Amino acid sequence: MQAYDGELGAAVARAQEGDEAAFAVAYRVVQPGLLGYLRGLVGQDAEDVASDAWLEIARDLGRFKGDGAGFRGWTATIARHRALDHLRRQRVRPRATALEQDVLELPGQHNTHDQALESMSTEHALELVRGLPRDQAEAVLLRVVVGLDGPAAARVLGKRPGAVRTAAYRGLKRLARQLGVQDAVDEGVTDDGPRTLGESK
Amino acid sequence: MGERQSDGGLPDRRHVHPGATPTGRRRAGEGSASGVRPTGEGSESGSWSTDEGGASGPRVTGEGRASGSRSTGGAPAFGVRSVVSDDELESAFAVAIRRGGVGVDGEQQAVAAFRAARDAGTHKARTRRRDDWRPRASWRAKFSVRTALSVLLASLTLGGVAVAAIGGSSSDGAHDGEPGTHPATSAPPRSSAGSDTGSSAHRDRPDTAKDILAHCRAYEQVADRGKALDSTAWQRLIKDAGGEKNVVAYCAEQLAGSRDRADGNGQDSSQNNGQSSSQNSGRGSGQNPGKGTRPSNSGKANGNAGTSVPKSNGNQ
Image 1 (cartoon, helix red, strand yellow):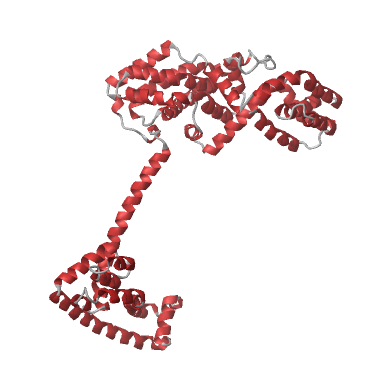
Image 2: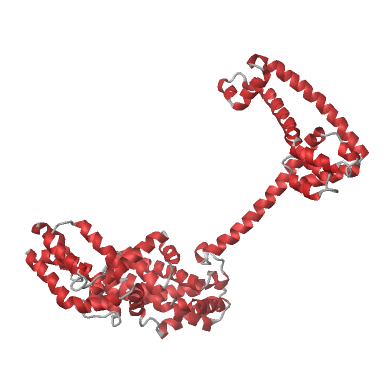
């Protein structure tokens, strides 16, 4: 997706001069990654949060300075703030989360062994990523799905680049382990591991 | 991805519980070491299977499962994983999660919002710090070049002013207007002699003399305050005077001498000004840009400038 950064930068520049067709182009380039990131953050509400984010992006476009890669980072920051707002609101009335998470995690859970990477479903991929610790999940999503480089992802998250790099690496490592190993996703087993290991001594 | 991960993953797991299930673990390790799966799969399945073995109860089952997964399910899974690089894993997730991202409604909504903001003039808003995503490196390079230039300019200006201030008194005292009389003919020998051998003497005399005078003036105030006299400068003054008792007398002598010299300088400079104004103006203009660390030298070197340009440059 970094391949489109030149095109994206040009579109953003034209949009800043008032070209709405160029803004539509920028939307089409950025939205898939942005929505994927938001799906990882807020689940099924991602579409709503994304449209909130786009309202803000459309409003503040004149303030933005930077190239295509910068635009990805800028929009991801806006989307993240909207998502955190959304999660904060949800925490006050926590009806939706559990349900949606269940819905999200039901399919694909037992397909793990047979699934090749190529045919990985959106739901399954999201399920795996959302199973990661929060910092790893966000780092992976920003790096892999949004397509940010290390420093940009760090700026979005407000962390040091080294910390984000480590988190992304650990997250990807964990994802690979879960994808590649049989029964690895069966969490009951891994949870019991240490105790029974102690017994077997 | 596969290789690097499992290379890192195997030692981690071993450190966590070393020797917890010795046989099972060694078995799994052998499995991976025996060449069936040199990279990721062996280590992964080995460690996981040990955990599972423990979970399901007796250790024997653990080994059984480990070997089972090695012999049957392991091979195809390994076939998948060994091909999986970092890039493939990342792009698989990217493709899966980005799928179906663009909806027509969302785009129309966003464009409508864009149009409204544009027409309302909202796009003229000022850029905040968080809106500036220009590459940091170029920004820093630009900043540093500009900073370096202004620092250089400031130092040149301040240096020039300082040298002009110092040079006003000391250069006139250091030499007595001789180059003014015949600059062209006597220039070459004088420049080499003056710069190579005589420079330190010329430079040091006014400086140390001034130091001594300053210290003498301050001495009276500092003398009663104990430790201040321990500093190097004061020690030097006391040494020059030949003992603490003699300082007052020594200082009185120095101050008287400096007053005489100042009077003499005043006459000298006025004579110079009167006699050869062109020479003086040439000297003055030469000193400032040269920001001569050694005022007297620069004065001379510029006096010679007509004949030996390289040498005078070398002096500065």
